[in-house]
Length: 212
Image (cartoon, rainbow, N blue to C red; front, side, top):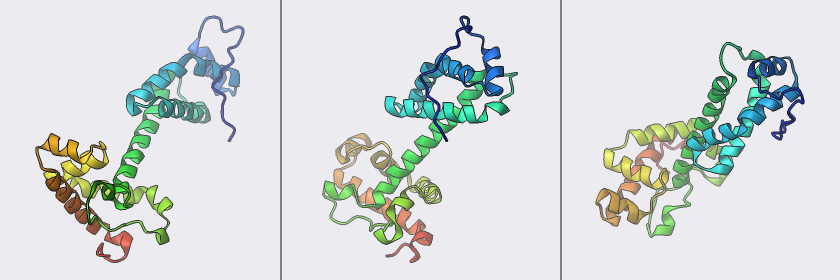
């Protein structure tokens, strides 16, 4: 589907912004009217997205995606509410989904062997995602991600804290040790134990009860 250009073109007669009139025209298929709404709210939308994701480039992309979705759904918009109130729900849902997928990718990175091995851990959890199973697909597999998050939530508190700080907050081993008042050796042990438990819970995906 053709993307809507965010460089909106204001209508000459729209000297005074009239949201209700623009919404009615946009609902009738007037692209210039919708572009005027974008022009009015795009900075606010980027600021809103930034409050969720704390990265300007991601915020700008999410705001644009939200405007595209809003344009696709504008015919269903009920005019008794303000346009931005309706649009905010679209934008917020996109941001929350973006953050959830980002969290899942961080957790799954543990199982792809890309992290702890560089920090001196001699033996980490074996890869759950093997090349034969198409690692790219598994990384975006929502069901797998949800299962990992649930398994993480069920960990003993210290293992959960260590695992979350490492793979969600991206703390170094030294930072985790300082934060939780542990030795780096204890941090590594908790990470390994957490990985083993989560790996075991993914036995359905491995076809071997998580042992291989």
